[in-house]
Image (cartoon, rainbow, N blue to C red; front, side, top):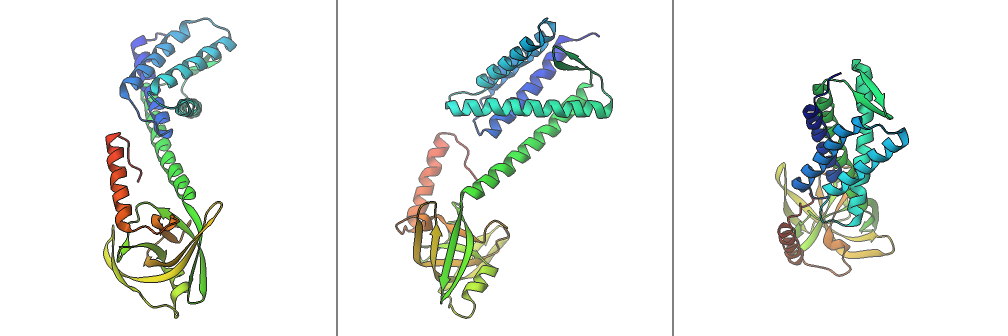
Length: 293
């Protein structure tokens, strides 16, 4: 079998670069492309030289593991030690997962591969390998987005009790930093229509009406007043006369979108919160950090 080292180098350079990039993204570590290119280049060079070595199986595994650790560390720049550990673990995890995907694909398509020093050496078409790499990358990115979205929701869910006119409703509330609704300079949370009907029907009057802007357009919504109790890990926050408006909440995890001011011990005005949000945005832009959506 004739092997063209430049093709082997390029293929492994692309694959190592892709896996390292995905590891950085999954770990939420900023990607510096010079570091990424250097690490991918070293990984590709190792992949070209490795088949030329005559090593026992145990030594071959040590060399491959050490090479993976080195290029993972090189891909990270100016980060805490925890970031290095997470990126390295993510790189090895995705390398094993992608290797398993390749073996399954080779078996399905009848591609040839041999075993040398305990590792698989493929004779598969480059288009097949790169095509699977693209599919794998899309799957990893979508899975990471779903995971971080799920974790963000779970970390910001709180057990809430709303009381008005002698009625009480227990719902899960989601603390959304993007909720900047205000009515007469007071923070407003959003409650689902079903929960609002159970709480306010027949025993509460509107405090007023406000305009709510959504992706579907603007609409007029009623504003109600109630007592709000939020259960935190070690304490409870009670807000007397908290304002809520009715919104279209389709999430199964929560039925109340809390204004972040409700999580403060002291009442804060919406103007103060907007100023804090503005300053936070400026600081993040100066540090060139991506804003969380």
